[in-house]
Image 1 (cartoon, rainbow, N blue to C red):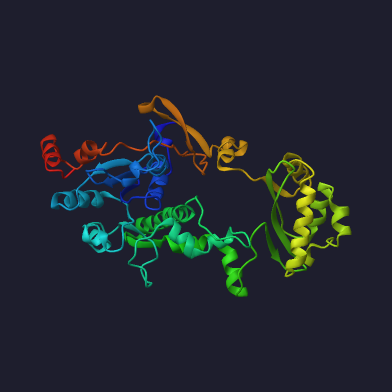
Image 2: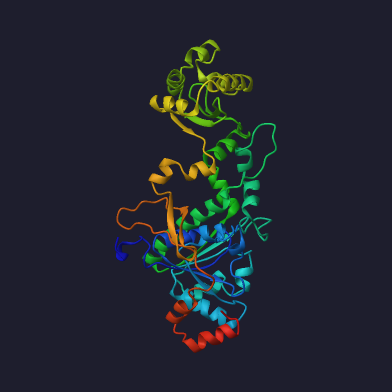
Length: 406
């Protein structure tokens, strides 16, 4: 693969004053795809996530996952000199991103109104917790806050159990992907018209979007969805179900049906149809809007699936052309054959540690301009190179360091 063919975003310049996850992943994805991404960090300590989830003798899994492939430049934005350097970088940039508490960007010299004067074509991404227009828009936000407010805790709850937020940062990651797409959409407009713009996103808004059609159904019915072991959808005439069960060894699997014609195929393929029919469930539609019938059917299926092995059930369902899969743990998912074969997990060289480490691959496969996962930078690793391109000489850089501007 030649350098000229690496990444569809080669030539795109990004400056990011962002921390945590939602504010860094959009630009990490851009770096994967060839963009030149400069991450601004404080000279003392840098992004706090450098010190999160550090395993003995290893880098921070949090920082590494969210900042690979970017360049680290340290700037003290509380000084006039630090702000001046940032403004020079912004003048050359296509995209700028920040996810500080509302008001902080303006206070520290990188608010939208200030930067648009420097670069009218700039695409400016601003990420908040709640959105800026509501009563809590001034508050800081986190992934768990957005999960709590946005409804996903109920979506994954079990009847009779407490609702809780999950360990996967779904609000952060959803926001990051929406920011990635929004930034590139605005960049297309800016390159066509010469006009930049500000894009505001929030963790809460992204989580609401993640709830998709289930959120719409809830609003139109004005009733909370059925949660727990099964997701029951549709009408008595066109029922659907997605349900999970344990095999005889306690290993879980899931299958999903999107119409009544799949029901008999699935039950026949599993060898369950005679028992299902005898119990009065030949027609899946009888469980729609009937909690007692639904619970009775799920209990029967629990018993039937407990008579065999997960691999055998999944094989039978797939042979009947029914969507089915084992339910993986995170560790199992990292070793899943389809995950590995498609490069969704890969290995990257870490010279500092003298080994290859298993990391996220890329979700895209470009036929002409493939992605290239990198590694996260050391704090201030690119100070001399980046500031040198701006015209600062060795003496000025030494002076900046002595005065803790970089």
